[in-house]
Length: 147
Image (cartoon, rainbow, N blue to C red; front, side, top):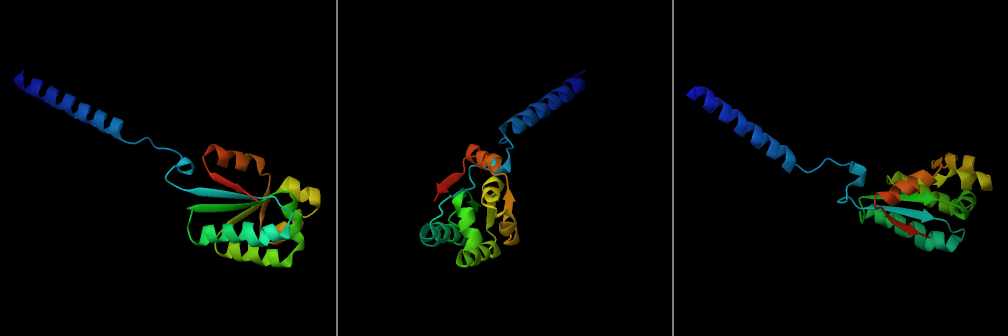
């Protein structure tokens, strides 16, 4: 009987330690919602070429290349879609950004409204509905910068 009591106590002790260890572990979370990762979504809406050349793309590209954030995404939205489809210098800059590994997306609704969806796809942009992805970014705590 004494041996059974010791074995039972050992099992109870092991279960207690195991339960404590599982409880003490940090909760597994969605990596996309990890607050230790810094993420920036740049929403480019302006149809002004000077804003594009001198501010929006310059900052976005630097933020990506210099690793000021762990992830930087450029979202082409509204009049910027029409501007990008027509401006060869901006197209070259976007191509350089994508070659450096930066993600560039465009709103399909906006691009369709300007008749430039096909052109933006030819340039290598991911053209899709952007409302849900941007909403997800906001809910996950991304920093959002709009030009």
